[in-house]
Length: 405
Image 1 (cartoon, rainbow, N blue to C red):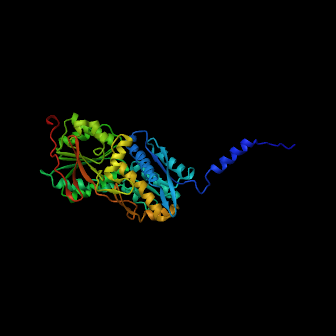
Image 2: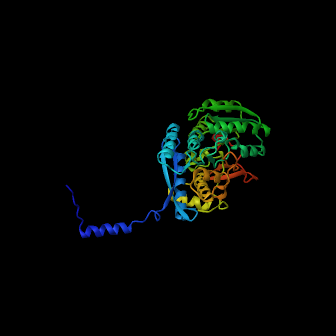
Image 3: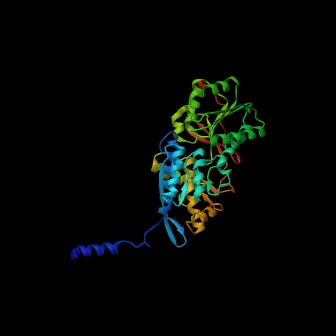
């Protein structure tokens, strides 16, 4: 028995209008999908948000400027983002899903070196380029991988500018303590710091590793006090540094200076400590200077203003490096004239451009090398103290005892 479906004249007209109104496949915007797994919950979510927000802002900005130009075609960027919940094993599974199931074109990185170390194995296995500004450990780039690129300077040189500054302090510190967490980034920092201290003629009287996410620093602080150590260098995570400073105050431990790899550039860190953040030294590869010109944002100062207006908090170098990650992939795709992962990977190895983060050019192992600027909290200001070209501003040194501040 044959069934006959009758369409009314009105229905036929509506179907015709819908058909001619739909754009053809050639007219639809083509997409380049960037995939990432970022810490949006869990212990390091406060830093993970920098990457989520920076990635999205950069994607929106590129699209607003006409997208990615490949040959005679324009491609729209899209972002596929997962929350790894600060779990490195979940992060690896999510990156595997991004490339094997979601079929993203390229990868952006997570935060933290131990995550980047594990997740980059996925990009290497599937031969999908990953550009990441969240992991600086030298271990990430020492394995001969071809598909991982990083926009943070090598962890082994993080205290390089600080040590140069130490040599010029008056009075010069006679003893130094090096404390570091037991993860990939902080171990690399320590490995690079030891020979630099020796070359600078500085005496290291403490060299102590502590457990990641440690909350009790009383034993280490007691040693610092009993040995009358002048300068304390700490490589750790922001929550650890907060605990360290609070306990230093409660135990009345006040060396001539202390410097931290993280925390000091962050507005949240300084708000959390209030006046107790005063005198703390830190480092950053980026400050929102109008001298850093950019194709999409104008300059770094304009970027910082846009970022603050959109997200309600100020960006630091994590956010700036995240934007540079997106821009590097866009530049490479345009240079390659293709979205083919191998061709874009080859273009990344040769890319060279000015960004709001600074000059981006990857060396043979896939990492860039930007000098760290020493910064210090001075009252309600964050002041640049020492950079690649030497002294910038006078430091507040030595740090006074807690009870006379």
